[in-house]
Image (cartoon, rainbow, N blue to C red; front, side, top):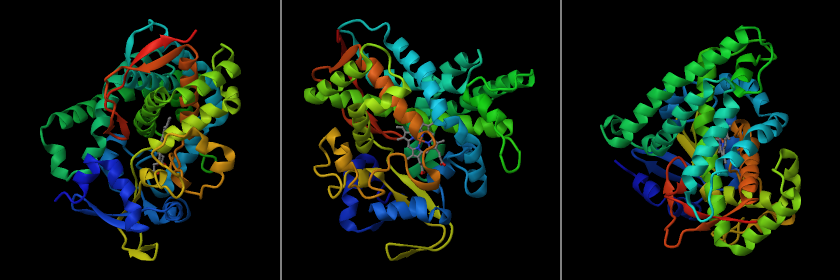
Length: 435
Ligand code: HEM
């Protein structure tokens, strides 16, 4: 009945990093479902990039379709390619530079403006709220946006907490009247109710004669036209993309920021180098997109955080019979790769459990094989939000750390807990002014 699900859900990191010992392609069972796990960078790139057209997204995304509709993450084939063409301009670097200045730094600074020296802050919750409000402000420019944002802030954590367990459980589990299911269903229903209101409001602004977008994502999506066909998206499609972006982008980034402050607080020398860099580069002003190339150590820290705390698993389903690592896999089979397996492989990352930002010094990083480090996936389905996320983590971390040190609360046991990613079970920290 359960296959390897219990081992996977109970001790995911141990389970996933043990896989390479069994070969380049390892068959496991998630519930009754056989899944072929690829464990080498080369096969990961075959699966995600070179042979991508041989695969659809697979079971996790099937289970998410009632929530995500037919958005970027759940759709397949030609339709997905068209949607990518329409959505990607909203994530262009010039847009991200402007989100960094107008939204990321402003909201990060606002979020800490009430902190008092010695106060204890739940850093995990703080980051989740901050990241969701950045996502919301980026998505919606209309007044109505703020109410919806509050609602989203309440709903998204309930969805993400339950998404993975749901995906790996047999169908009947979804219908059990247990608290996790009730919270998931209620949150999904609330989102389906509130998001259309924002889409309609943005549509009304455009219909009233505004010919350009207001810099917010929703109006960009409404105005986007396919260069080949001239067609745009229906309101329903825009709705699906908004839900997709909110749910795929929020937890991943918030969790990375929470781990960021946890990790640097464990190692004074690393924290000191980080503080020295932001003091020198920013000299008291807020971070902008243009500062990022000079925040070299900060970027190495971000990479090391993403190496250690990526999403758990990327799943696909074969559309035809495929051969991977000499093994023939029939059409309709689930095939997956876990970034935890690749990112903790000592062949590419010596002493993999050690937090070492200097692995990302260019001379060392350029020796990594392609596919060894894929926090954002690879190939045709590479995360469209990757630059947004990398910018957000660096800019928010620099803005907060320019003013405050976050110090662990003595005795607080911080452990990874499985939700849609591995997030801290709790992360209380005490805030201490730096200057
Ligand atoms: C640290 C933060 C993030 C991480 C680690 C991350 C990781 C990923 C990964 C691994 C995928 C590929 C899934 C696959 O191949 O099956 C993905 C897809 C996606 N991500 Fe991100 N992501 C992050 C932040 C964001 C942000 C901020 C946004 C939007 C603002 C975003 C939007 C999306 C979307 C829409 C997809 C679906 C793409 C597709 O299936 O074609 N992500 N993300």
